[in-house]
Image (cartoon, rainbow over all chains, first blue to last red; front, side, top):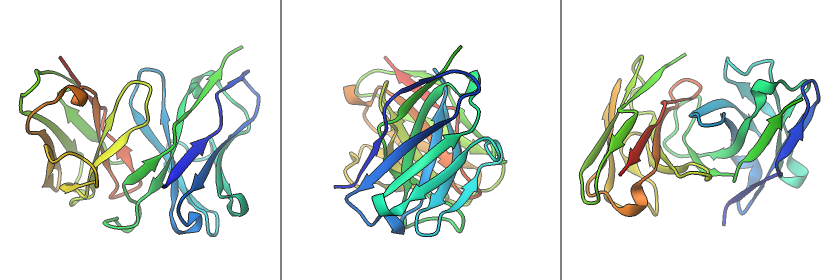
Length: 124
Length: 105
């Protein structure tokens, strides 16, 4: 059974750093891109970017380029999303989601499995 | 960026109704479009990919159609479990989601 299990909720202060995780299991981790999606309180879904676990090739949506960093540790089948200096506007639920492998465009794909989400609260 | 516009933003319906949600892209995306269902406090769930392909395990009352810039998600007979928010997603270039359509009683 394919599963993506994310780390728990975080409460941070503005300016602090943070790294949240997403552990994949039940499939060959290095054969599928992992994407990250933000959902701000009461709002819709925003695609942040994706990473290829095999070689850590990361692609960022323009709105998130330079704001966050995607990484992976394939030895423990885990993907990460990190911030170096959080802002109050980073308060949101963050989802990791596997990209499919069939019926995909040249640059991206639908998301077939999702993690449960990690709530990040940034407040002074 | 490719913008995705969903309509309506809220839809009031009853059990048994036929429901149609529209998604428009700011430029042609061929058929690189997916639909998701999200319930409160839960992660999104894939319903349709490549505009019209039903994801495994999704009830056949859900269907998708369209190409280019205009797409629709249809629920043929609304069930109690279908009251949720629905999002379209283009994955022709990067990926962007529509603003969502809340289906309520």
